Amino acid sequence: MKIKREDLETLDRADPLARFRAEFDLPKGVVYLDGNSLGAPPRRTRERMRRVVDDEWGGGLIGSWTGDTAWMELPRRVGDKIARLVGAAPGEVIACDSTTVNLYKALSMALAVDPKRRVLLSDRGNFPTDLYVARGLVEQLGGLHEVMLVDPGEEGIEEALARRGGEVAVVFLTHVNFTTARMYDMARVTAAAHQAGAVVVWDLSHSAGVVPIDLHGCDVDLAVGCGYKYLNGGPGAPAYLYVARRLQHLGQPISGWMGHARPFDFSGSYEPAASVSRYMSGTPAVLSLAALESSIDLALEAPMDEIRRKSVALCDAFIALVDAHCADAGLELVSPRDGRARGSHVSYRHPRSAQAMQSLLAGGVIGDCRPPDLLRFGFAPLYLRYADVGEAVGRLAQACRVPVRAE
Image (cartoon, rainbow, N blue to C red; front, side, top):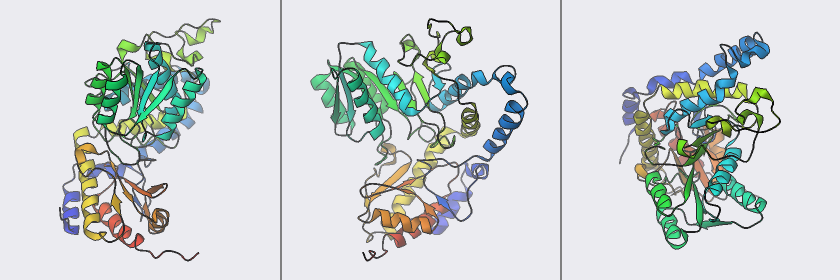
């Protein structure tokens, strides 16, 4: 596919999502290709935070936990909005804690479904924290369980399930790989796991907000995700936990007061809430939840099919331009060329990746590196233009040809 600058300008003029760029605060002269790590701030978030601090906190004080502001309802309200982005029903998603904490809850719950099963199955390319949590949980449980890792891909998971399916308690995977952007077939893997009698936990951190997700349609059991990447909730934004309604009888390992059926009774005994609220633990982070809610409201204004279409097109354009202008620059594509199998970022190997990225940053193109040699570029359709892709590739071609610095 050959692309010219005028083609990019034509695509920008015809872009049905073009109006959303004005909804974000972006520094002048910067091409931001790191929204897969931290999304850009929506302009409306600033006003929302002012209202929360000045009016709700400053004016309402402790009364804002209830009444019209209803801070107590934020985790459920924001969770229901996230549910619309991931194909879940109201009352199946709660916004709280971090992805790490929620994954710990989810894996603990999954192991409780059939205590005779003691294998936690994942792939070697899974996000390191997810593997840390699983191994830590195994250690906490006395080392009686096993974390089994296979090569990434549906075939590796299915082969492992065919060999040891009767032992596998849970299959836990990241929907879109954080390095390669390779995307699992969620329906296929979930069906294979269920066929073997295992529970499935998906990490949606690198897909929610840019990839159509249908948790209900895929019959997913549990899922987690963060709020600060493509959901643009801000640094350290609250995460979320999805629990299919059919599994909401399961207890969770962190029995905090906010998961109580009547938290303000301050009872001496614990009685879990009879809803997704039981998966909360501590007091809601009101400021962060308010910021996340404003960004989710913005995301819900954009049709997901248009977001996905533009995401694929931006990545395809980037790859085509790199092919055309960086053929001798030492770049090796590690992401799928087929957009149907790819999330919304593109990764390349380069022998001097750190040096190349420093050159890009100095020139106003913000991406990131993953050791030892990976360059990673994320494409957030709500605020990126096709022209940004052309500018980024032009600077990348120069950055990858910078001579090696003398030691």
